[in-house]
Length: 64
Image (cartoon, rainbow, N blue to C red):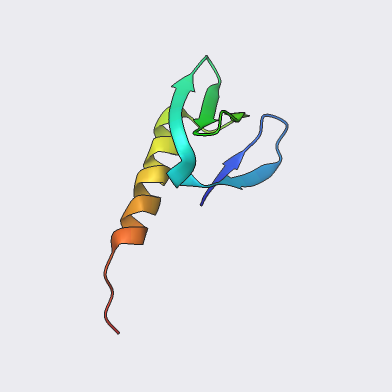
């Protein structure tokens, strides 16, 4: 899950694995696989960076 901010300032989280695409229109719009769309304050680059980091965290093998 990645945290993002709606244009009205409310924070929420998006399941990064369900993101179909992110576009700049000029605001950043996240479209999910199911067709839901969200306009967010974060830049396209920031959303992508958070999604990539989320994916890395899922795939990191840790030994304790």
